[in-house]
Amino acid sequence: MPILVPHAELAASLGAETFLSHARTVAELLEEVGQGMDPETWKKSIQCTLLLNGRNIHYLNGFSTTLDPDDVIWMVVPSGGG
Image (tube, rainbow, N blue to C red):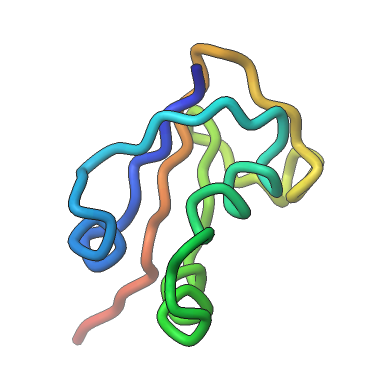
């Protein structure tokens, strides 16, 4: 079963540090996680980079990337400093 590791703000909203899913694609996973959330909060929450087993999904098949049961998807929020 694929595991989503949400960024800290989303984890706080979900009340969990990980989310187990039965989704077959990244798009299905995001749809599953976003169900029941306030649309504005969800829109803000998905402004991040998605890494599937350490690889950016945009270098795979984007949101159509298929998921295997042992996959881990990380939501990474870009940051900068100086």
